[in-house]
Length: 168
Image 1 (cartoon, rainbow, N blue to C red):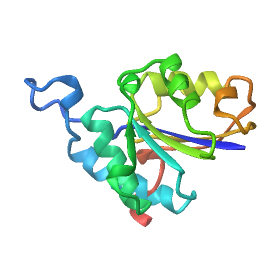
Image 2 (image 1 turned 90 degrees about the horizontal axis):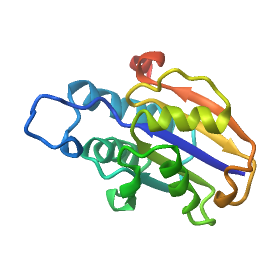
Image 3 (image 1 turned 30 degrees about the vertical axis):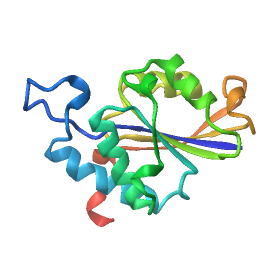
């Protein structure tokens, strides 16, 4: 069995129009939701074996909250260029490249790719995974390369407004 955690980056800022899209930071809500969701998830799951992110600032900053929550160094974060606004094929290609010794992976990505991929992989009909939303998926396989042939089961779907983070 493999376990996949897909995370949409936290809410980003559009305050500075001179910034390139990939350089946009998190806004106030993103800086609030990121650490809260990371702490919430740490209570629900074991530490993933590998953390992979789009190279955009907002995904890296979101990933940093999760790495910190799981007591991992930021250097543990792997950046994958094809995840920057990647579609389902780009996401799957990244997953298929994960070393087989890893049984679980957390991937930080963008929308609409995350929503489309979760729905395609699991057969779910999630309309839109909101910012800092996290979907856990169990894959009935021992080989990341066989993800397409594996039975995929959604384990959970959490997002900031759907979780009472104030009690955590």
